[in-house]
Length: 221
Image (cartoon, rainbow, N blue to C red; front, side, top):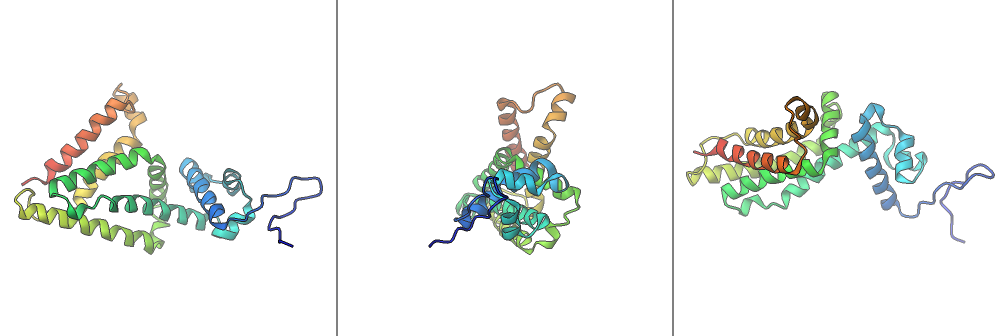
């Protein structure tokens, strides 16, 4: 007789969910937790709400992730893995230096537009002064590849006479990332202050072009 891995509820109550696919259950919890933490931060997020969103129960959440803080760290690591993994598909090392930098700037802006939850998680972690990020060797290791690839692009551009000498790859990346994050994080307040709806598609497209122009202009010889 096949074992039933569901947990029976009180008499007359509906049975708890049956979990026969560990990977699917884990992924559902992770997706639900990402939404919960992005919307409410670590302090406001509730394990009950995460379990409900995932269609599971707290027992399974604790089984796979331990506790709320451990789950938050996995969410944070997964968020960084998402952007770094997507960046790797750009294949910057085989592109012309200007094309590579243009594509990275476009990618960075568009990724933040398409993943507002990532910005929310960054804001949460910054409010906590990177408390969880400091304890994650995995996240810090992910950044090494990006800095190395961008450094190689800048050096190739320098040798071709396209880019200024001795550019700091971190400064270049911070230029494109900060322009993207600041705009999107503050679009609602800025729209009111300057009486211009920054979330409109044409405004977003105009800022995208400005980000690319500014990044390229900042590195040219």
